[in-house]
Image 1 (cartoon, rainbow, N blue to C red):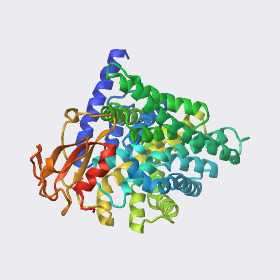
Image 2: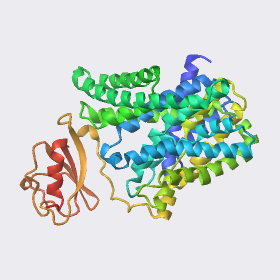
Image 3: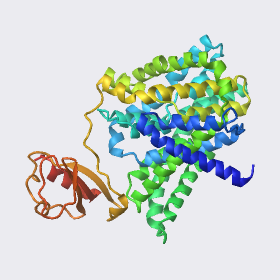
Image 4: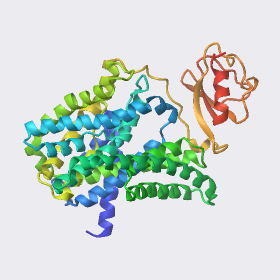
Length: 486
């Protein structure tokens, strides 16, 4: 095909995917499911009949997409949100994947006649929850969970890819080279996680310093600079035998919780880039699969999918969170929110490229399990949350405003939404009488679902939701004024 035809087809698929994404919000369908479906319809077995079987290219696109999705997810993660669940989330991310992979290995050995090592590889591929799918579903569905469960779920999905990648690559090498032993993977795992963690933290700090000191004349160069640093973080960490995925996710968290120039515009840019990468990744993976090859393994796929969703995942979650403060309802919610997405499909290309026996069957099984997971779990998360009683009351309508009109007072200024508590010093007083600290500006007030543009004489009432532009150092003082503390 000519370049012009390739670009035209790619543009049409992208536009169709965006329309499908909007439609998914209206009908409650997870967007990743529709992206995959469009890719499958465009592929060899679909109406468009686009022939595509380059597993290496699909893997490369998937890895690049996951790098940017993980960085964007980390960049938008509030450190205050994940700090209370940090160790719990890390235990769940690592121990949960290992337990789930081992259980799937036994099931695949008994039900599919896989060897235990082949089953372990299959379990490692399919046991990690997918950051792209979880971020998409949790942030676009009406889900508002209690006890910081959303933070735990998102932390797990963002931090369990490194161990899944490590196990997949390591077990693929062991199967391809029988002279290797499983025991040899243990020190390699410690090395990768340690190097990845140190490199991610260091690069996150370096990104903040570099962006603040670059003094670029054109604002549009800042996203490009950050992109170069993200790719350097992944590639450089991987070259020194570290976990590149862990490094970029941690670098995103560190950078997102630092003060740096053009922070809000960079966060918006990478949020849009993450969606673009998610669409591209699902489309390419959809093109790679042949639906005609999925049909013969539907029975095995349903069996393994049911085992993963209703046995392996719940056992992994309940064991991993055995000593946590969460009750059985919260644990059940975390279990149900363990969506599989593009990450397992990308991982399934590793045994394909290595030419392992049954690699084709593993790939097709993984693809089918991802479809069932996104379809069943992704469409029912809100309903299960309400049924388990972990859904908090729906908040009032959020502020809607063009962020371009909100000034960036300084590198540390940020938008915060606070509620005027009954009995607080602010009740019944004009904004000009509150004595707000320097660096604090009331931008909007939401009262009875109406947005008011305030002036200095605007009287605050109990229950008012105040959109505040403030420097980080002034937030504690403002919270004391608007709350009834002291």
